[in-house]
Length: 170
Image (tube, rainbow, N blue to C red; front, side):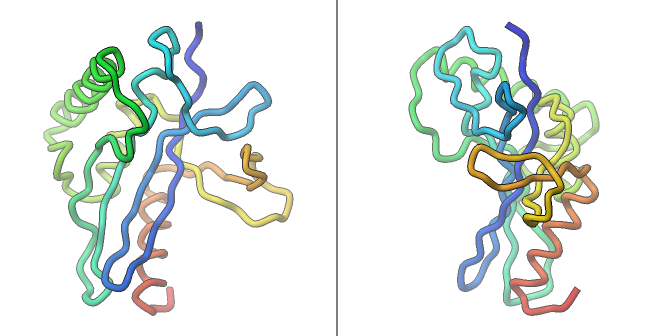
């Protein structure tokens, strides 16, 4: 079975004092719509990618940059031995990619570098951001439209969301 294309879907969550950034691994279904990865059997070429994300956070009450940028599994739905072994295999591949560039996958130098190297390790074709309803972009299974950007633009997108949370006009 051929591996379907994967991308990283960007989102942020704002709380009272912090902004949490997440780039979740997603794929496209047969109709080309953006989908969460639902691989639950070891023969699936996406097995091991479900629940994998690039995360970072930033404080809203100061002017500091994103910190704690890392690649990790978040909110894992279920985990058995086969899935755990597949997850470890994916994490080792990500780690090798980061180490080849002299970076640490747990505490990346900056958000853009972490995003770029994660996408490279996962073979992701880009980063997806939600677009307006003006007819551009690709449809998601949830009825939303998404556009593809590169790692630099993804970091800029995250910085713009952080500035909004801080009340700064960009």
